Length: 366
Image (cartoon, rainbow, N blue to C red; front, side, top):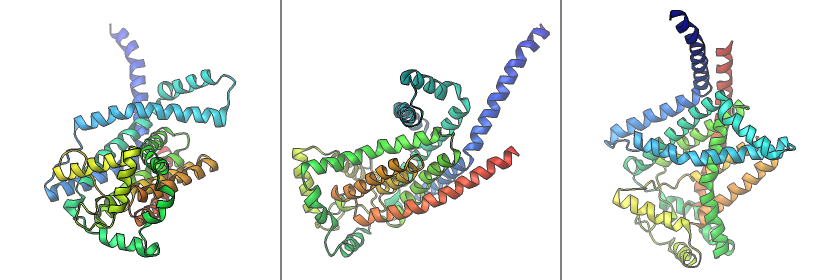
């Protein structure tokens, strides 16, 4: 009996030891990312204590919902990524067979990729939950007050005219407005796609880590710190928050277009304002800097790491988001300009952190 137990326990012990080593490696590969996310949580906890508002977004039920909701997008992102890799780089004789084998290897056989990717995905989802709380606390920490200043700066920078007026000849019709609205909606899927792909991209650790570090840094520095310091609501809510009616012509134009071509932006804008006024549901209003623009540039910088053509395509998308953010009333033009500057800074910082992560892993392996 003892001999049989020894015989059968040794393979099990070896398997457990291998799994333990792989899990430690996964934690090591994501060590700086984990540190940043936990530091951000600590800052959120201090905010929570300071204003006596609990962090409702971080609980088991919410995290479970976020994880389950992300699964279809994650799987879809992996299929698109591996399919694009097959078309651009591999070009096999039997594409279907190659893709099936590649997906099998990615999800079931490459345990190190899967473990490291799952640690990173968990960090990203947890980070998103923390950010949701921090964004909701902006008016508690610094009441919205910068809008008249930003509106004036916008006019000064654009020849004494509100930028949306300059865009009206091009975007002030149902077709172009719907294009802007669709691009704004597509942005979220694009962020999910690039985030999930980066989490699983352990074949190029420096490229992977640069994007993931830039991702969390831009949301912390631009979406949290700067958003709190420069607390503003944007043109769409200019009148609702008592700043004046100078943007009513823009909102009336969008409402007229919405009667012809329904716009997701107007529906979401109403939902956010209702949530803010009632204190229930979605209520995270914040304009400066534009995170849509900032994150679009982070994606563009990352796309250049794959292919120059892909990079320029994403640059075009970032420019479209900048224009769309103004035309749809979400942002002042300068919100996007600051978002672009913040993206450059965060990308450069992320590259340095990726170098640090690389040195850290080499030191542990030595």
